[in-house]
Length: 468
Image (cartoon, rainbow, N blue to C red):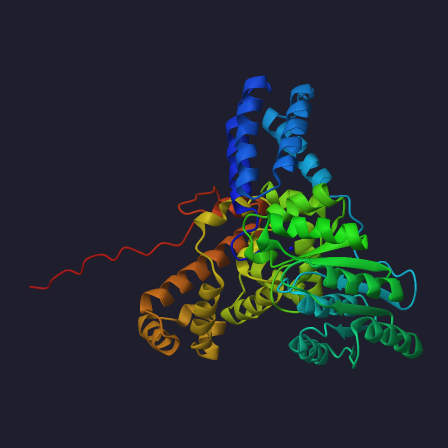
């Protein structure tokens, strides 16, 4: 789930973490500390552009459950509160059946939405998702109102190797012919990219209703721009009244740090979010899992999604070799460069780290960006093969040469080499059992000290004696 530019729900997560910090150390949950906590939660949700009625009901339910909860001896009030909030967030956004069911072949999937919501690109992303599932989809360019949409879909289809059906005439006729062809050639799924408008109007609704009536789609999804907040929720409600939606696809979620639409859609419309768009590339469409999203909102990471991303992009044997080299302190800059490439395939570095429990809340203190990765790659590429294999060869003169070749300062190269050595020492300490992997988050913090782990420090040179 890019883990994601500005972090999705960043403001809500910070507020929740603040609430939990204040509840720590409390012996019991009282009416006063729950009221104080829920005041913060209410403000966080409203600032995130969550529907007012949804916020009111959410806060009311959490307050009632928190005050009625019997705190177990083994569980602190803070942990109990987090559990209640987590369960209510899951209830708010779910349940949802992941994936696209395939009751028939071809399965007809109809996409509707306003112009500018990213519908045409989403059609290609859905096709890419189905390809990864081993299915054989085709797409239909039924947005005859915007000729550029037809050409755009053809280009995207060419990139995926997916057939795009288009033709002359009205959109409903094109869709009917496309479904007939899909049955003839054995296509598993047909994705109908219908026309959008700048606003909901009668003509638009008549056209999509006619397409739905004549093609009888198995799934009807509304594509909404998450950055429009409550406008996206209102659009979903209006379309559902006319089309009877099966779900919503929220696009541009990576650009929305508030996330109000994601928290409001299901409660307002009764229709689940099926997928979320988290980037421009065609593989940046992800199944929506309310429990995983709740984990991330509460700063608990998303290990399951991280593992799934890794499975898609990382070779298992290569990963095992890398792990062995790291634990034996045989890790080189060549290995590091390979791992940077795999990180890019999985998403940005912040994306990955924010999925790790315990690190999401620490991201603000870590200066890590994709631009920084690019600078690191440039420095590694400016090294000779021998320097990459044996970083200890990199003395002061070599650092100056590497800096000139990569467009950075010699101090930057020194910093990279120093951090690389520290990381290598730390992994060796974990491999030898002197440091536990659970200490990793703490080790990453500036000035951290853990028993059994020593950071390298420069030797103090003795002053030379002057000969008389």
